Length: 291
Image 1 (cartoon, helix red, strand yellow):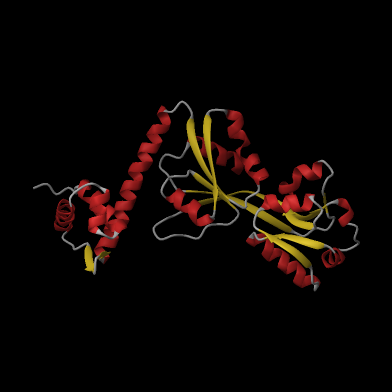
Image 2 (cartoon, rainbow, N blue to C red):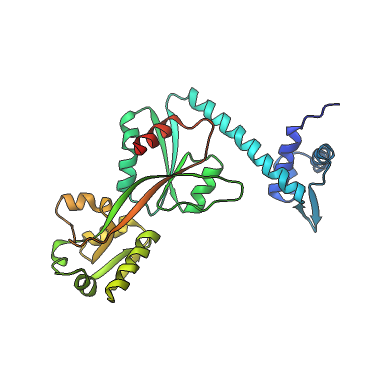
């Protein structure tokens, strides 16, 4: 008697577990519903546990079913990773898929990726989005790394590897004529302010306001650092922003940093999944950041 697990049965089970409906899964996979039922029943017989309970027209996982799905996800994710790793070896240019928080500084992204552009051996795929979407893609190996400003929360069964790769000082930036004040309190009281919604920066700034006991005139809260930079360039107000965001404008004299040390720093993180075969470009890039 063959006591090994039939992974064909396991794949069918996983598809039904994700869909939650036998008939829809059968239609999507172009197999008969009875054939699909047979595959799952044979898996249940092999495991000696019931995997589904029927609630109305929906199939709900039993406790054993949830355990089986967790193992199935890891098994087939490892298979996808194997294919991706081996495919890289056949490509003329290896692909590196990078996700970045949509609010992340474009200047920082360019600085981080510059060694890869100069190397020329890699084809880069760049995607921006919110944290949940990017981490979902990282989890399914649709992305190799996610660049963000916060350590991601842990997920059930998923262990992210998070490396702090840089940090940038945050200052008040504006056209020079808006910065003629003798104290930080005066500046915050009299000038219109543009504040990013990035959590680390916003929380630290709230602490400064409280300590100075001032009521600032915040005219805009912006979730896009590029827009913060444009508003500052246009002279709309004084922007609270990491130095790297406005580095070109400061270098050209368009904007200036206020001479008040806010003691705020924005961290940058690279988030990956622990992998048996890490992407060679990513491995080198993160090693360079560590050094």
